[in-house]
Image (cartoon, rainbow, N blue to C red; front, side, top):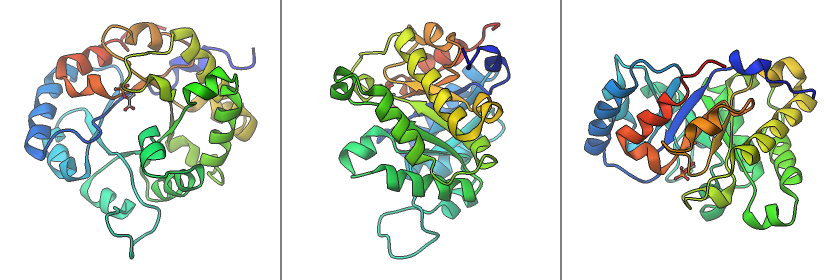
Length: 262
Ligand code: PEP
C-alpha cells in the first residue's frame, strides 16, 4: 500500500474539543480550569474550540497551560459589511491558534458550501491560523456507496489553491455526518478506511511527503470508551470531539487515549 503506517509516529496527534453553542464565558473559564490539570502531561496537542464570546476568557484561562484555543468559524474577508461575522485578524489579535472550518452543522444549517469552506480556509491560513477542515459524507451518500467520491470532491474543493507550504497548517477532520452527535460511531475500520483514503487524495494533490505530514482526525461520537481503538489506527491521528469535550474527565480520558507506543 502506498500509504503506510510509518508516518503516524512523526505526525502531530491532535485532540480538539468542539464546544459548539455551549458554555457562557464564566462556564468556559470553569471548564478550562477543570480540564487543564487533567491534561497537563498530554502526549498530544490539546485544543478547545469555543464560541466566539468565550475566546478571550478561554485564552486567559489557558495561559500557562498546554491547552490551545480555537474558534469554530471565521470569515474570509479582511473586514467590511458582513454583519455577524468575525475576521481572521480579530481571532489572531486575541491569540486564537486554531479554527474549525466547514463543520457539517455549518454546512447543514448555515448554507456553508465547499466554495465558502475553501475561502475561509485560505483566509485562515493566510492569517497564520491552523485550519481544522471538516469533511464527511451523509448517511445517504454512504448507503449509495459514494463516500469516497464525496470525500475526494470535498478535499479537492476545500483545499483548492492551498499551497504545499500552507498545507502544513491544515488539519483534516473526517466526520461522517451520520455519526455526529448521534451516538453512532464509525467503526475503527470504517474510520481508518476513509482517513487512509483522505491521505491518498492528499498524496495525489501534494505528493507523498506532504500527505504523510498531515494530521487527520476522526470525529463523530468519539468518547472515553471508543477513543483508544480509533486512535490506534495508522491514519487516525487525533479526534474532533463534540459532546465528550464538554465534560472535563471524558475529554481528558480521550486525550489520555493518545498515550501509547506506536
Ligand atoms: C463534532 O461536533 O465535531 C462532533 C464530532 O460531535 P460529537 O462528538 O458530539 O459527535
